[in-house]
Amino acid sequence: MNSESNVPHFDPPLPISLFLKSSANTYIYDDLRQFEHHFLHFLKKIDYDYTKPLALSAPSSDELVFILASCWRLGIPFVPIDYKLSQKEQLVLLNQLDIELLITDQETSNLSLQSANIEQFSLSKILSPDFTPKEWVAEHKESVKPAQLFGYFFTSGTTGSPKIVPLKRRQMLYAAQASSQNLQPRRNHLWLLCLPLHHIGGISVILRSLLYGSGIYRMDKFNPTKTIALISQYKQLVAASMVPTMLNRLMNRNDFAAHDNFQAILLGGGPITPSLIDDCFNRGIPIITSYGMTESCAQIAANPLKTVGDLSRPKKSVGKVFDPNNIDIRNDEGHSVEPSVSGQIWLKGPQIFDGYLINNNADFFDSEGWFNTGDYGYLNDQNELFIEARRTDLIISGGENIAPLEVENALEALPNIEEAAVVGLPDEKWGQKVVAIVKTTNNQKIKSGTIQKLLKDHLQSFKIPKEIVQVDSIPISKTGKIKRLKAKEYFDK
Image 1 (cartoon, rainbow, N blue to C red):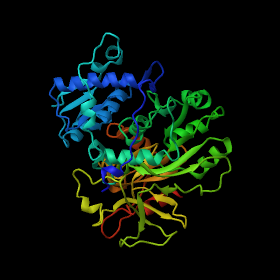
Image 2 (image 1 turned 60 degrees about the vertical axis):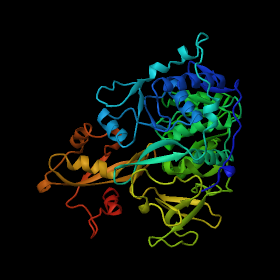
Image 3 (image 1 turned 180 degrees about the vertical axis):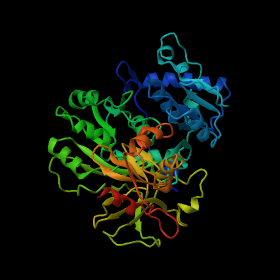
Image 4 (image 1 turned 45 degrees about the vertical axis):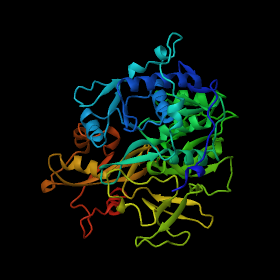
């Protein structure tokens, strides 16, 4: 991999620069420095091993942003967990890692882990004039190197089994440098953070801002009315990261516009329809369509569409892969194909992770270190990338990854359902919607509403099929795999 001398370097932010703003609070980078002293002191008191990952499971808050930022600056690896998962589901994930500490807002009586409530890190207390930091962090920071891991992220594949993606600081440094070519807020400018903080998309907003020395505007959750007010009127807010579902909700409002200083919305995490791009063009909303994944530390390609009517780049493209990374399109036999020929997308470069923590990496990397993304697409003569299918069978709805197998298993566990096949269909609102075909015992008639109601006890709402069609048999190949393209035909009728 690249030597540390080649890894991008960023100057530290100025202490008086704006770090974080939310609906009720404003903080500067000197506040973050003071918090780091307290955080390091807390970890020393519990004799924490800094090489082991620290788990975080809590809703978005100013305190959570401070903890994540401190972990990055102090070189402490972290594991963001979806706080909406049950304790049982969280424990399954945490048991796969050597976790020494969980910071959460929940009761942890059923978790056999050392834990701390996030309320212990109250900013109003830590940043009060009476608080005196107990530890000096400069020496600790000097030991942090680009080759170190900064986090472990869980990602679902088509099998439904979460894979653990270890990400290194090197990846984030290269990713931030690449992103700055298209979008880089300056000192005292803000990047809107309205994405969940258990995904790389939301985490990237924080880490990029730390590296650029710019600030973050944090929302508890995505609020269309507040977002429109910020992008339309708040001059300090110059960037935002969203999934297409969020942007669609904004575009449905007549009062949505961008102020003159606003740079762009970074758009990713799901299928982006040409009609959405056209709408943004026509209304003067600057967007940057992108392609990336957890394994590439978020976006690794981007196609900025800067002005109304800008036809210099094809709308359906997600742009070129960022240097110094490389891309190759290969057929099923593993051979490179010509431009405009579809195939699997392979990536190689300093932004690409070094391998999953548990899975057999020989299934994902070739002998020369190229990573098979599992996505399908093609390149044109200008080396611009066009995405045709993400992760083969994976469904991306509203920015959330949905593994068909998980939904199929839940369906087949219900009374009278023998077999099921789940696929994603294009949807203007959500990017894709989940639908299913099912075969019942003795062809007993079913009611979609009843099945959807039963699934609420087993699946998150966005995973429940929006349509369910009863069929005589599930189309399968000779090797027993579901023919998902064939399954989709039932919804064309």
